[in-house]
Amino acid sequence: ETGVTQTPRHLVMGMTNKKSLKCEQHLGHNAMYWYKQSAKKPLELMFVYSLEERVENNSVPSRFSPECPNSSHLFLHLHTLQPEDSALYLCASSPKLPGLAGPSSYNEQFFGPGTRLTVL
Amino acid sequence: EDQVTQSPEALRLQEGESSSLNCSYTVSGLRGLFWYRQDPGKGPEFLFTLYSAGEEKEKERLKATLTKKESFLHITAPKPEDSATYLCAVSVYNQGGKLIFGQGTELSVKP
Image 1: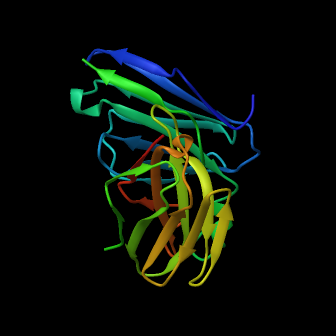
Image 2 (image 1 turned 120 degrees about the horizontal axis):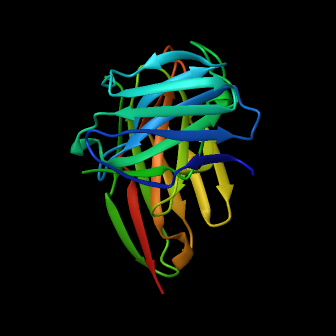
């Protein structure tokens, strides 16, 4: 496997279900991200992890729970979702977090193929 | 508030008809501007990073340029396989790893 992989690619769940999305990066990067992409809207950053430590939570509802057990793996645990949560969920990684004033090259983010989530 | 706006929302070209996509930004301190290509049902594919006004980068039929207010993605003699949504994003100083994305331009190239 190369690059960033995500499983499953498609997921249909009811509002009372609990499911998890998985992301794995094979690039040796230290930072990982979760994004939400809804139709006709810009990508929305959800969570940022650097070396397994969460450094940003972009006002995401608690029904989304991230987990980063190591620098190569990232999970998004889902429970009690709403139909409006249906979207493409994208995982990305970058070499490092650039910090407050670091170079932009650290922030070149490489994306996985996404998980298409439908909440019924 | 930091903001990125792309235009047009959609662009239809004939094969070989060159054109440009625009990305305008208003940010407190630009660290870098990124262009991505996204095919339907797939994740964005990294194309370019531009760091400072006046910088240009090229890849096959694509050329990205940057000024202090906007970036252009020029497509020369496009082919049908260039059809995709092109996304622009900026990285801002004092905002860590966050990328701020525009809404994208959907490009369709007809043979």
